Amino acid sequence: GSKWSYIGPDGEKAWPKKYPFCGGVFQSPIDFHRDILQYDSNLSPLEFIGYNVPSTDRFTLTNNGHSVKMYLSPTMHLRNLPFEYTASQLHLHWGNRNKSEGSEHTVSGKHFAAELHIVHYNSEKYPDVTAAMDKADGLAVLAILLEIGPFNPSYEKIFRHFQNVKYKDQMVQVPGFNIQELLPDRPDEYYRYEGSLTTPPCYPSVLWTVFRHPVKISQEQLLALETAMYCTESDDPEPLEMVDNFRNVQEFRERLVFISFRE
Ligand SMILES: NS(=O)(=O)c1c(F)c(F)c(S(=O)(=O)CCO)c(N[C@H]2CCc3ccccc32)c1F
Ligand SMILES: [Zn+2]
Figure 1 (tube, rainbow, N blue to C red):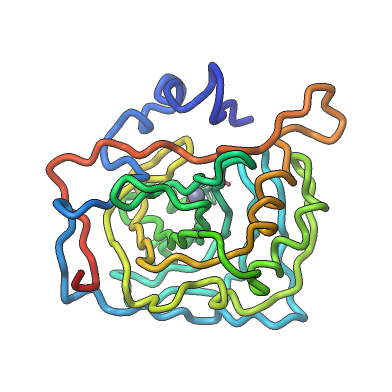
Figure 2 (figure 1 turned 120 degrees about the vertical axis):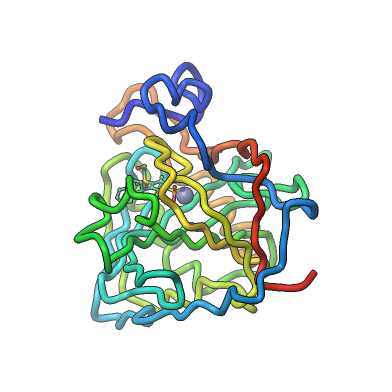
């Protein structure tokens, strides 16, 4: 299996030894700061097709030892990108109970509490996500920055199941709901750049859309995310908490991030 982690000898500094792309070009995540941002009037609002999944459908939520991920319905896709991209899965990145600064992307050097990623693949050119994931135009990931605020009933539709996916390879069925409820206000305002998977194999295959506005979840919801899961299996004698599962920001030289909004 994938022998990499976020801490210790298999941590991110060691990734390039087994996964050469992790030491390569166009790596994600990055920091968004004023002197690399450029307004682009061609960045139109994305269209979220089929995101309103009926509650009669079920999403599989699973702990894969690195994150908690939910498989999405192949009827969900994005429009207004260079190609049509079909939803594959969503997952999260977070910090720990003493330091709720677990987002992957940062803004002016500032971490947010956590980050939700919705992974899509180019279904116009590739039959599935596995075929797409190592192609330059293969993936499109939406990133939502999470910060502390009022209780969020939409995020609770996922978070309420965390007690059933505490350990690696556990899974649970989540009733369908409108995934568009997970997006922030003004989804027409976003950062756009070409980058990579933020986990091994770190393929430079991702068109990133990071929404400008964060979404609020409560302190209690965030604590549940930071304390519920383990990277290890339920019978492992040395349980490892699943915390701080974010990659550090990567060098971003000679490149620009395009923004759909005027600051
Ligand atoms: N931050 S991110 O969006 O770059 C990103 C992750 F952070 C992450 F954890 C995963 S994963 O599948 O849960 C575990 C590593 O493969 C994926 N999964 C991707 C990579 C490999 C793969 C294969 C099929 C479907 C999705 C993915 C991912 F795209
Ligand atoms: Zn991710």
